Image (cartoon, rainbow, N blue to C red; front, side, top):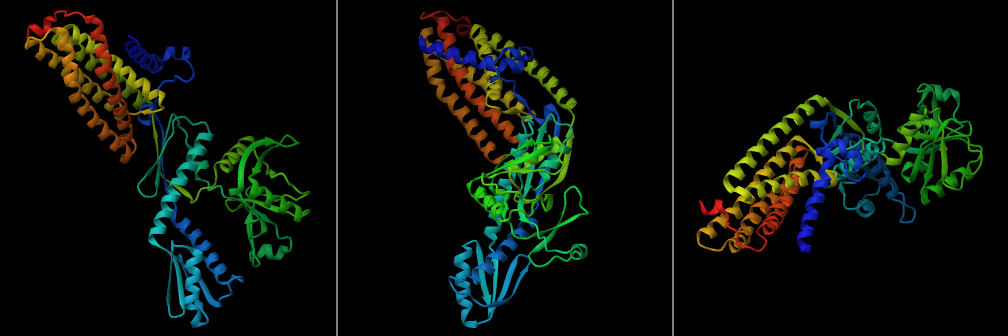
Length: 519
């Protein structure tokens, strides 16, 4: 008895999960963790962006890094300096000329050991070439794509955007769907910024004439102010502290009640920031974001706690946006919006209305058909079918799944399979009764002998839906999710709940079932 009550409890709980979706007016009376199902872009309307990861820029930055690592490996005083000349970077291929022919093999060996297996080192005479292998380049692209998706997700989540869909598409594209968002301009601005922040010392020795000429001395670069692009700041090329060491950033107000951004560094960044502010008191340092100077304050005193403050004439919204960018991390490569769509909610509303009418008509036909063919047992099947529908919606909402138009198709397909899962045991019961088996025994044999067939058919669908989810994208995955949930709820309602209802009706007695004997 306890087992049967537990089965009924699970069914009732699954139906309750669907009430906020099917009856939105009752949603306020439910706990906060029971929410209506999320609607996808095709049903709710919103914005869709297709972004491209700029791999050319990424490879250029990587080649600059490879150039520096190559030079450092050859001038390592601990291992011995290998003399070379003509060190060049030609479209990602680093080349150099080893002055002493006898040191060519030594140079190659050192470069291979320092640079690792992802770099190909070759030589022709005394000219050594260094470049990334094709496998390493592919891994860089995949890594940049996965990191970009995660960073974009963090930035969008920080804005409070609900139910975003962010996924890779093709080799270097990111598809973003934002249901309910009709103006994606601010989101585009945020996700398009690389948000690479670095701290540099300001070179106070640069004369105004040099600054005006635009010719920066060695080890110095001229960067524009973000608020005043015409005004340049001479900063040393060396990065004193990197934004990768940031642990947290928040928008706040300073003592003059002006918006600022507070920063907190991790242990390593805190040590470097403390060293910077201790050794360079009364000097200026520049806070650089994506190649532009946010501010260049004067270091008044050492800052040992790893906490800093960025001011730059921000508005409150600007401070919040910058805090989001810094907190979510820098993109490994720039992102370019190559396609943008805005989907109106009217189309989704029409689709939902049509779906409701179509589903209602289909369910009504099924109810009438099952009652006409199977009588009282057909009524049991109809009740189980409605419970199954509610459980699919409720479980999907509880899991945070997003309902799309293909998802509705998955629900309809599941209902068809659920009817079939009821018909199979009923027909088996009919065969047993015709053979003269007592009704109670026939019911038991009908469910027992048909369970394998029902399980085989549904598990096959489950395997197919899991494959679709793993290798599909976008609407295909939405279809796979609802189909997978539907298979599990169908097995529960049709094989377990249906049996409990029939057992309670039979109540341990061999009641006659007229619809079976008349066939």
